[in-house]
Image (tube, rainbow, N blue to C red; front, side, top):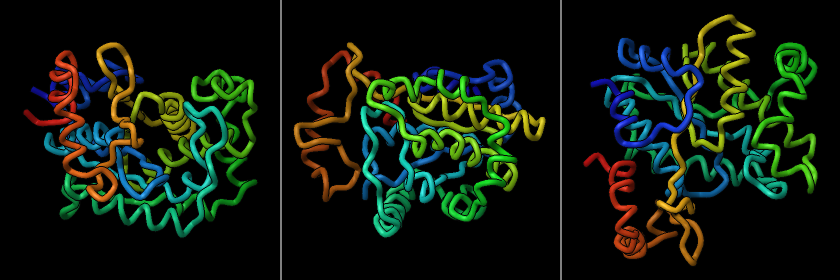
Length: 270
């Protein structure tokens, strides 16, 4: 049984760029893949938990994960699903959050010798030459295709800044860079990232004429479609200083019966 079957059976997979090719690839080869995390807070939350579990299943099956921390993309902010522009974060705040993320992730992912890689996209994004980026990367993106993306639709009425419009190009460039440096051929992430992930797949296929793939995982929702992981106090954090172990336990203890099986499938190895 390949990891593809495990992820399907447990209900992780939502969308795939090339279904038949991905299925065959995960059955026959060991690949390098990545998931990106923008450090917008000093702790991961339950929304990240599913991505970490998906990553952990992949690693257990012998595939190599790259954790990409968004020290560069975090300075712009992803407009996906947002009604207005995100607050701009300082480099110091981002650096602190990255340190917190690394500590938490090591409980889920084995960062032993060559078993997983952790990188920060600030290392390449902050030194990019703008004109060079336009010539090398911008030429592969059409504005009308970008404007059709789901991640921008919510922002039409309030206005989408050119600042945020670049986010998709940055994420696409991240995938190309990881493909170039680590032979990373697949991006995984939450389903709200679908448009941004496709941008990277298409960039690699156009620029390098090489195969690249993406696969999204479901967001954690109740059986009637409401997003889970929110409490009266806000997000359900993985940091015991931000959400106490008692409150964390009570949240899952109080989940509706109809949601128990889904939570056990996605958030445990049971």
